[in-house]
Length: 296
Image (cartoon, rainbow, N blue to C red; front, side, top):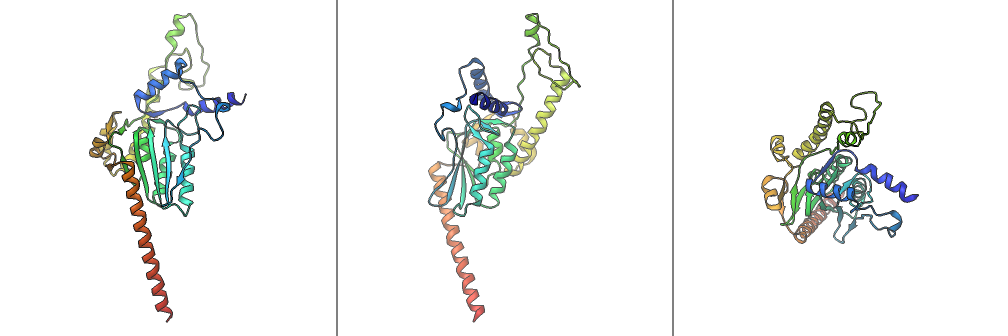
């Protein structure tokens, strides 16, 4: 019974609008539909297994993962909970031992739900501490939206970045019902209420309404990307065609700042942290000297 309740909760994470790399989404959708990809029951997991975490290294860098399919809450199919990632970010900001934050990114994107809130938390964290994002393999769609709020974005030379856009996936089963001699009835209070119900034809008006909703959410994505990457909105719109780009091209397009290895990224952050600590020490010394002189 516990597994059933968990799966019902998990299912709620996968409905609604999607911001994901198209090929990954369709392969995953078809694998789930055919039964080739099954959720892992909670009872089959070990204690703590499947739960992300973050760690602070000795130099004060908080390493936070953003890996796998992004959903607002945890999914039994795995991936990253944007709510949990936000909690890690807030904890890192409050932690006095943390001098900088590094997001380790490898995601095909995910649901639109929860992503805007993650963007807000990444931006807020960057106002307090240096906020870096490094793409270790892929940052697509919702992943691009999220990391656009980071102060600096880097990627491995083989990484793929892009797939900017939003979509809804609906299946019109009215033809199947008709072929089988079934007739579906939808008792509703309005022409948009209950759209997409099994066996009911999806009308052009309903498609237009869904398109309106997709465009509204996508506009938030594009506006945040324009602000985060300091791009004119028209330039952002020209990139929002669903294509993915290798890291070198992504630099030229303004989606990321540089192509670097993770070792170089960490070394660069550590050097900056050390320089900041040295400067902070000098500032404290200067204030102490000034105070002594005032008291003489």
